[in-house]
Length: 547
Length: 77
Image (cartoon, rainbow over all chains, first blue to last red; front, top):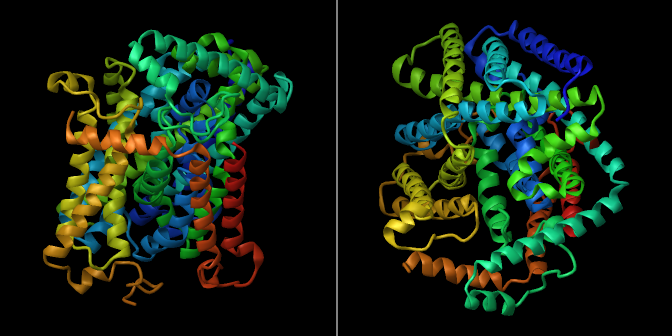
């Protein structure tokens, strides 16, 4: 990318200064643990809605989705559309209001009220481990992208991001995170909109862009298919040629289709997208991820909690046009990069397209996406540790002042840990980011299973839920292991899955196994007492008392 | 070849037989189900308790818009 000028730096510094002012100003109103972890239950729907979207789009997503759109096309938009919107709407009217009504601070806390402390600790430990690791992974992966965008040193990027985010999260907790997310969301959306508009103008408009995408992508698809066929046996080649096409378009590439066949090389075959992303991963993420749900739990009222998710779903319609279309413009402008160098396509496009000042705006948009995710993970990891371990097992009598102090010290601890882990990860290969994304898919299926069973059924028992959660977790880990080349060679087996990144399928199977275990064990083992089952949906009135 | 491989191959083969147009309709069908479910929700669950009856505060309308955008997108792409 071309060098940043002093005007670009001015834009970036203005954004950073505004973020710090908002974060520290909000922090001056924080007086108690409840203020720190749930913003004193005072958040309005519009702030939560924008914060949900900003948190979901991380810096690595902004660049990674662009790179993947270059490789595979608009199919990556599924992750923001069918992977989010149905789940957000069902969450808005069924699950989120119930969690708000239960007056819990964390999802594991709800699981103890509905089931048992064993399940609470197990789920909290899994998510805390994932979030703590993800802090380092996000800091490093984003620093690598930031280096390619701005030319800054990786160590400087890691330290600056962690310390800035740490400062306002330490000061203001969830409220600071949410209100800075609003600014960050606006900067991110405006920065990307300007980038996309300039890009479409440069290629001559929308219709020429679509025509060029088909031409370039189809040539690339044919070249890839020819290279793959050279490595096949004659029988495999014959099987491919004679395979029925079942309504697949022959006149255009897959780059502009959201629905791709089972044997696509992209990470989005339609069964994985519909059954894995739409029905399991999406709901698991929007209902079971503390990082996401926590801000809705801090809403002013049950109605505001619902409205925030609906508002977020509306904004989500726009996001793939902002994060995936730049990758398609890069495909048209730089078709020579190929799959292997797709990740540098976006920084190259920023350098080629954006004039002075706008480059700074895009770097600010990237920083906004990065910071809005890191601050949320930082705050939610702190919330999980303080509420589900410190207060639950060590100091149940801790007052609000002590909770605030411990929350702030824990935030500092996670900032130090994130920086340390990010530096340690530099010694690992680049694929480490994908491994941690896969880890997320291990937990989503089982977490969704216990939440759905607990909320929708009074027959689900705590023994069944604990067994189901571990069975689902083991299923994910087992399937992941059976797909590793080393394990397959050792067992003399073929890999279990034929798509490149089968994490959507891990989620489907882990959810199904977890749910099966919950049903069977709940049927045969002792049932839970009424003080537990009243935490199923319909068991509480709007004030949180028994219905 | 293990039992898991056999199950995987069987499912892959069966799903491969589904035409892409049917798969597209399944995705749109998911949105239609959510849309009809939201439309029949009682208005007490979709309106603010302090000012019921205002169209701007009715979450059904905004949820309906979000889904309509999606149906258009999945019909076009």
